[in-house]
Length: 61
Image (tube, rainbow, N blue to C red):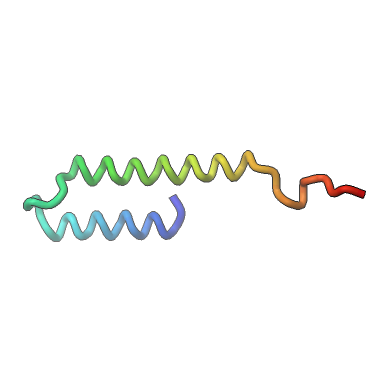
């Protein structure tokens, strides 16, 4: 996760703790949402690593 995603996940966790277990999302749902964000971020990073940088592409002479 990047810094923005970490901050967002931390805020969600703090909000969930402050709200207690009330009718909002369960801890299992919060954990699942956090994992989905984590895997999406990792997938994005992996795709970016596999893409050639513009500087690496051959330029026609």
